[in-house]
Image (cartoon, rainbow, N blue to C red; front, side, top):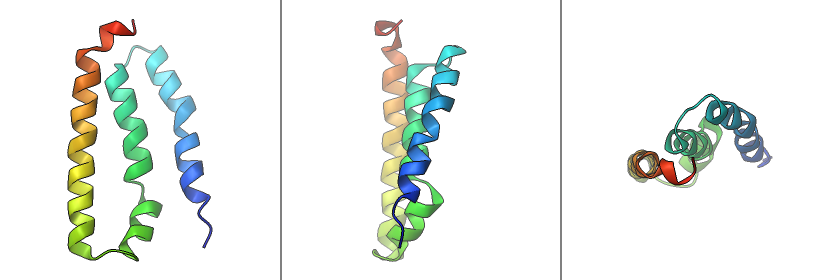
Length: 83
């Protein structure tokens, strides 16, 4: 199994994130986008589903989604520090 698929998913988001930030999108939104593409991508969920039970995978997706949303709001709230 080729695990390089995960690297492609993350590195492909960097130019998109840079363009979004340059257009004025909040830093929290950009970070949330990058984390969601990496952690909740279809290839990573398929690989995890082969290792963990379905219930644990659902809990993982829920916790990661909640964490990503929280990080997005937190960094958008203090985004003026990077402006």
